[in-house]
Image (cartoon, rainbow over all chains, first blue to last red; front, side):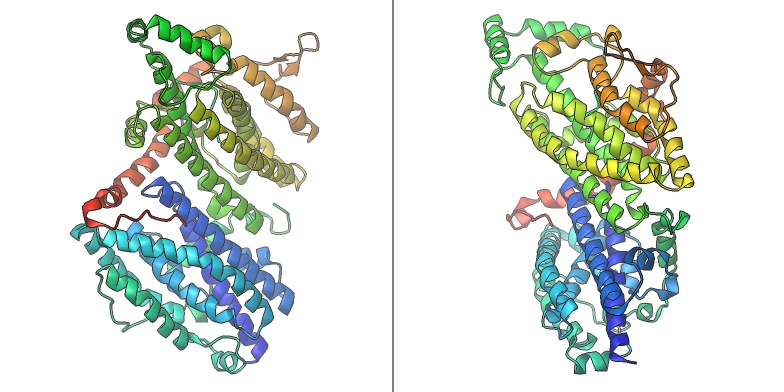
Length: 251
Length: 334
């Protein structure tokens, strides 16, 4: 794999993760357990979808890719590179909150590393995004700790959510083809390094919350190779429902 | 959004009269003089029982309208065509929920808790703007809501922001500021369809035809049938009559709709050059009251969503209240 192609793969998987999890976050509109959470999930959805848009624009501008709307709304599921974790339906609030916690810490680590990337467009974007992510992880950490320390019932729910999420979260760090090139060219440090840093970052919060960190035995891979859950297909059909009515029209 | 011009009230004239008898006439006169001078009434100030009751009713229904109003558009966030529309719609709906929060806070200053208001919403005791009991069937509906319902709401809210109760006015000033951006977005999306492909234009015309009656209902029944407006207008709780607000809306927006080559499903709709007032067919007011009673196309669906949120969020709200076992730090919002 050529370096150029490896960079595009990296950007595509990041963007697809952001778009799909942004879509999921936006599904909490009107359903949040308190109005403040409704607003928080909407706000995070905007950030995620905005990041996806910015990443697709890098593909377009730096690699002659297609228009971001066309690229995001018209691809087939097998051409997406998001992880299964992002695809999963919103489920219960505790599942969505735990996903938000695990995913946003992973994003933070990724964008922090990219702020030193040798690929300038990503370096610039990362500088902006990591500032926003600080608030996402602050939000996640506070809610996790608060709910976990509010009694046995809520801690039990949060532990179940963590157990349900953890192998899926491992899928964020699925090794990609061409990773060695990206590491060698100092584009980013590679998935294994990001995973270690992520564990270092989430562990103190997990401990403070009184939760038990599961062991990563069977990370759910496949998304980065275009193998997806049934949920992605449904999500894409919904997302493109209006756009596909006439992809040449402006909306 | 969306106050909705019409404030629903259970007919209970006897109770009102008895309550009013308890108001100290000297204090009442001083209170009314303050309002006549244009002063704002603040939470700790003396106020007539009926003033408090009507304001709670008004602000509470406005707050409910914001959070229920987030639902018909909210279901289109995931389907919005393209990044620009998607981001604008999420931001807008998020604002609406935020407006709900501001308004519940304003109503709480009058002595009714947010929880009690939500319970009354779920039990059907407390109402919200009728317009949200209609389905948003296509993307064009989202643009009609974003342009015309928001525009109607602004007419109502700008009027109310000049009312007499300080906390409500201040909340409305901020809300109106944000609503003006929503209106721009709605107008932009509406024009995109109106000037788009024949299919897009057809979609928009269809949505407009379906929404016109709910829009005409929006400001409430004609003044000639309104039963308790006078006192509310003297107290600056209600700031403009239903017919006046409807006329103001028609005057500002019907020409804009016609200019785009769209039609409205009312053959009698025209501006009377002599009176300067708009003439129109009476919308079906029996239907309006049926929908208020809970028999509209989406009443059950809307409340079911809120009930789901309340039931599934109960353990979380309970966990937040257990101060003895949790850190006392305030939770940040993202």
